[in-house]
Image 1 (cartoon, one colour):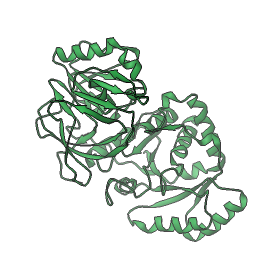
Image 2 (image 1 turned 120 degrees about the vertical axis):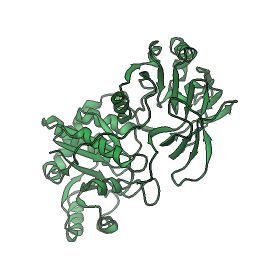
Image 3 (image 1 turned 60 degrees about the horizontal axis):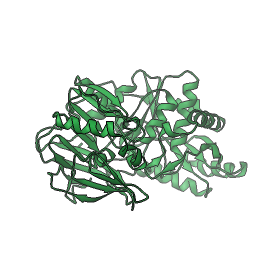
Image 4 (image 1 turned 45 degrees about the horizontal axis):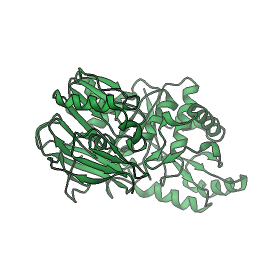
Length: 438
């Protein structure tokens, strides 16, 4: 039976991602069948997980997904020997003060937590921090500690002496190492496929972590996955029977649980690359432009006439064309790049967006559709999130796609546009919300 545990931290930037990647790669090189999950709304870390483990990484979202959806997703790891679950932000940080945290996932599935603590600027005080995490929630078990960015042997001795009364195993003490740094940019890490030599990085991280972490002892602390269960229906309805999906460095943000659900509904998924100036397959009755980094490729996309004409042809033939975040921007009329240059996009929605003056907009969203569409009847409910720096410069006369509220159910606003069979918004959809809150 597959065992699993959670890698978490007191705060973002503590090193849990690199520790997770290194352990996945180390176990993969030893011939173990490993799987992984990422807590929360994250597209980038799962790409690194996939390269480290050789298996798809699925998201587990304690706020945006129904409990039945999470249980079904966990079943994707049933064939593995071991699964690692990488947390999001700090262990108890979530969508609201009391919901949506990594701790919620650990408690829900009964998985123990390994706490990665950055001790680069503290010594005995680390024990007070860990004591607080131990006692904060009775339903969350912290089973071990990995100390990150330790100094010399004296620093390690002081830390272990201070932590000893807590009775937790210190499973590793990792010194600072430039090999354990992943490049980043405005939405997080660079994409896995853009990393100059990712396999060398992963191998180097695996070697470094294996030299300083008791990986076998850590793995032995895992607890079993629940028995697999079927996914609830629907998640996000399949947009068509044959869905052309943009997939390259400009359109990389697709949740694998949605693709799996669409395939389970009988839909065929046909990838194409806008950056290679490919049009969506003419036989497709739906086109999905996911989020990504179109603002970094605006010049190239504007010159991709075959791609842009293909979107227009799809709409002219009655196909659904749906864009999320970056895909939504490309469905608009113009996109202004960071340098202030303006680039003509598909023109299927009366929208102009700009990255010239980046302003972060981030958060979970409760979404209600305002029109009947491929996403379902008017009034269909979803949960999702926004995470972008682009701003709307102008917006013409078209129906909004959603009425949106934040995670607390407040700050109602219109979101997105619909014109004919073209539609989109800055929201990334995660699951249906036709349910009472868990």
